[in-house]
Image (tube, rainbow, N blue to C red; front, side, top):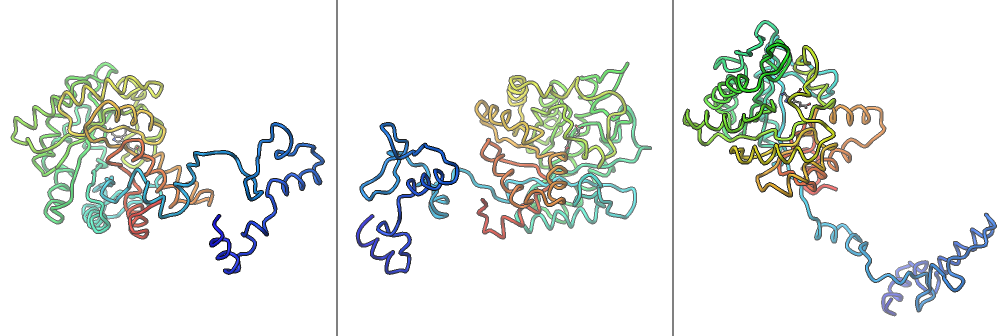
Length: 391
Ligand code: PBG
């Protein structure tokens, strides 16, 4: 420490920090420990002393690399920060329904509701005002429209195409994505057609192609196949192109796992599987390499972006795909993850705002460009409060 600095500290009334006044920290600690716990060990003493003393007599570890120097102030931390999170990285899922004119809260997802088409437009406007520019729609479909073949999924007068047209007329700058899968429209509660107790692949894709073209015609910017049938990305790309929708993109749910974290979402849409589970088409949570096969197939079939789902428990999968594919990546912070944070926050066990911003930043660090999250609006509000600098 320079003499000038010592002087400045002393003059500034910070005499306690001046070396002359400061006792050797290690000695003090050792002395206290000796007294109270009667241990004989003194880290500063002996031939193999763990703690040395510098020229000033202060405790010193002969350590040249001190990474803490790059963390010592908010200014330094901001200068060397590797990743950033902005509202534009977030995509907001919106549940829609027409069972009534009410906005219906979803019990297992506090703060989330099934929206009417009117309140959906308000959600989009509110998101846009906060800098969230992309949205994905999930319909709750009445039971009497559900069939095994899920034909309601490509009805141009269905709730999703009407919602798309409405958003595009009221908020033309909003980026709108739709989910491509049969489950909301399936009386079996599965993502594909069921024959003899099995979810059939290729016939399902026929329906998915019709669904994708229907959504493209209604104004979808991107379609997101979430069904996990083999070959669906290539077939949907061909279908869109054949119908003139070369500019409609595909965000493929490439690595979608058979996960218990989707429970609250299935409450929201009343879309729990009618029998069995989804393990013959969604991936086994035990597998990581398999995700790379799915990702490379989807990229080769013409996907514009790939998605990993669920989020936090699968950050390793996200990172591995990031290392091997150059397409933009999305991560889905799913309903169960949202519900768990909400529940702990309601009990006062975690700081919701801090934990959410940290979680979303971790997605960025692991390689996500886009994060689908039910926290989009809250997170954008918090980021805006902090001048877009979080953590
Ligand atoms: C439908 C679909 C699901 C989710 C997104 N699209 C549920 C499922 O596959 O059973 C889950 C999203 C969430 O949990 O937030 N294919």
